[in-house]
Length: 290
Image 1 (cartoon, one colour):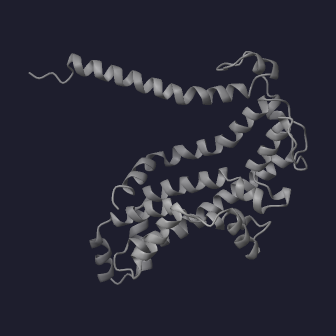
Image 2: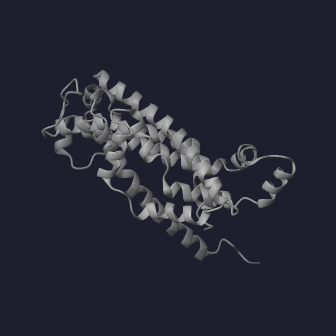
Image 3: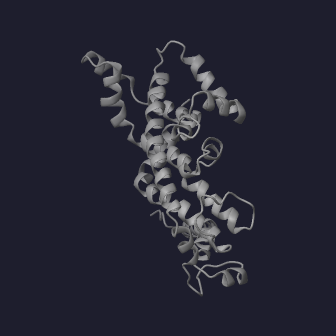
């Protein structure tokens, strides 16, 4: 009788598992080091090169970061921009992707070419700034949303996902009297939740980590999102010249930088488990077909 658990299979599985554990450790240990370093004193941080378990537990870095209302105001701005921006982006991307996925759309190939063209070439920072300025979006939160509302990469993934759905569903719905909008809302969207969850996560991470647009378009420091304020804290703690008008306290030394990374990363880590089951399915199904 054939034994599926032969010695060769067991050795391969053991080596495969050991290799995956090493890879996971290589990815996990640096993050653990960052978290642990944010909870130590400055003296311990300077004395040890790599910290996995703090010897002297300290919350000084977090006290400095969270002791100013500027942090909470900027966090509210980041959350608002992320939520509204993700909603706007997913609406615009899904509408455009659905239209481009329909083979009967007039001019579909031209629009697809223009979308692909933007992935290779763009107007650049200065032309984009002039467009935003002429639209009157300077010092407006919309300047953080509209310039990056539609990503060509995300659009192509979602379009390919829609193209993979059977055409017979749309044909049956049209026989029952549904128009294109009803087909999209009642049929396409419920069948594409994996794609929506994946693309929403992509957009949310992009908006949450966005820093360039805020620096370019928001001259009022009270409107800065969290990432820009944390950047200013790091600049000040490093002894470099920076705009500290938005910072109410002078932070301690290097441990602050680790605390900043933790604060900026945790919100996205909390969101990811809720969309994890859709993530791989949505990204792969949207990338198989061209």
